[in-house]
Length: 352
Ligand SMILES: Nc1nc2c(ncn2[C@@H]2O[C@H](COP(=O)(O)OP(=O)(O)OP(=O)(O)O)[C@@H](O)[C@H]2O)c(=O)[nH]1
Image (cartoon, rainbow, N blue to C red; front, side, top):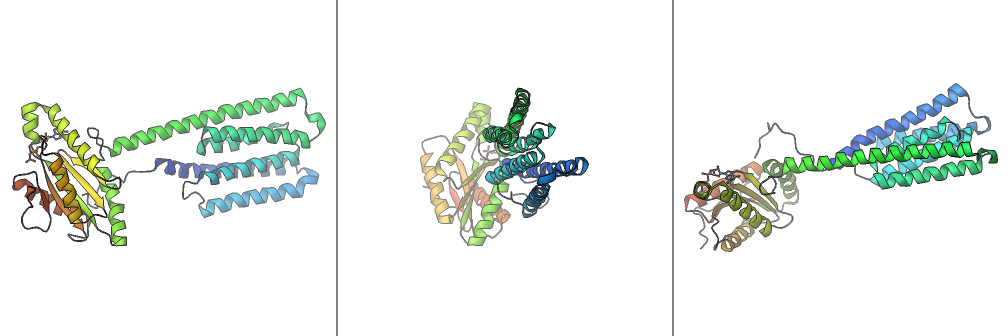
């Protein structure tokens, strides 16, 4: 197990969540940019006259909403619907602004692009297409509410070209974000899996074991650490070739996977050493599981030695339990292999 000075940071197990957190900062910047643009318009070009009061109220309310959301850290969890609410509020605010300034036929109508970008960054392609459809409905509403003369072919063409740009930009950004998510998942798999067996690697095991240990400490429930080392892999490699050695490792990995529960951690710790962490399992439970495994490989050529240590019986630190299980495994090996030793037993327990 790694010490305090482990040079590698823990793996990021939920890259999408981290990504959304990062995009959330961008979302507030987009919202504040919108507030600044609207304020600039009102200051530079004058307020829209009769709608002035409502417009200012909407501006203050919108800024307050964005500020409150950023302070409350709305997105601590991956709550997509909260992000969706942000984009709907943004679309409503822009619609109100365009209505108040009668700017639906001017350059301000492209402010909707900010909502499209926000949605594409955080909500995916389908939600973004729906947002563009909602924006089209808002354009129509603004035409209906405005002067009937607004519905000219030139104005409709302008709106059509705006919507086309929204669709293209929304689609491209969503596709890019999707590609980033796929490559993040790939990187996570590469960083956490052993390529030969597909099991977790040592780094992933060390990362994932810590929360299980902490949970067991909190709930005062037992768990067991099992260290398994193949016997005679070097002889297989030297006698039958490296491929045969690889096949033996893959075979053992598959058997470990088969006998483990979905809540168990199974990892290839390095070389011919495997490690299992079984939550809610005491030493007796772990030993009988390993004995069943040894019975199942009796007819095969697979030989391995097993050591077991359990929390809280044999230690209250993860590293301590690992080293106890490792030492127990060496006792099994020293006694001829293909057997299970539990930490506190003076003699390794013979399987047969
Ligand atoms: N085929 C193959 N061999 C590996 C792999 N990783 C490590 N090994 C070999 O595993 C062997 C481990 O050697 P030892 O630690 O002496 O283990 P052993 O031969 O099983 O001997 P004991 O552990 O004492 O029973 C070495 O020869 C390594 O080269 C791998 O991914 N594939």
